[in-house]
Amino acid sequence: MPYPGEGVSTMGKRGPKPAPTALKLVRGTRSDRVNTAEPVPSTVDIEPPDWLTDAAVAIWDVYAPDLIRKGVLTAWDVEAFAVVCDAAARRRAAAIALAKEGEVVQLPVFDKNGKPTGFRTSRNPWLVVLGQADRQLQTWAARFGMTPSDRAQLTGGDGRRDPAEDLLTG
Image (cartoon, rainbow, N blue to C red; front, side, top):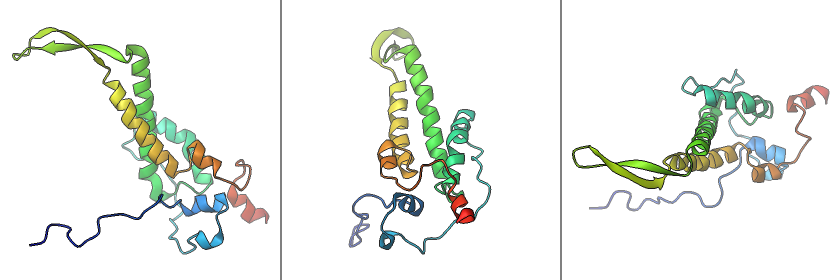
């Protein structure tokens, strides 16, 4: 009897994930490497999801308008960009807590009956939250061209104009 997945390749595609077409166009990628038949999302109002916290919505409000103007954030990308905003908000909260509490904290120790018996020195649990949010933010922000290394690869304009203006002005 074959094992689950036997005979089926479980390896994904090799190499880096392909850049979104909008980023390829801004970067000046060779035309033969741009998918001109890529499905295009409808142009609808793009709003943050209801599940985002107020802190994450504040981050959305800072970055989303520019990403929408550049054609990088579309209706299909709302959940993915919400993850960026959520991770950034959690990272900020963790950094504030760490600044207040320090990286090393005294945590209570309990006996088998749940009675406190003393304290132990430990790494602050906020370090775990900070690390997870950092990794998530770096991974997802890069997909929107929001990291310095991704941005360094971009060409095509001064970044202050709306690309739709070119269609109107010729």
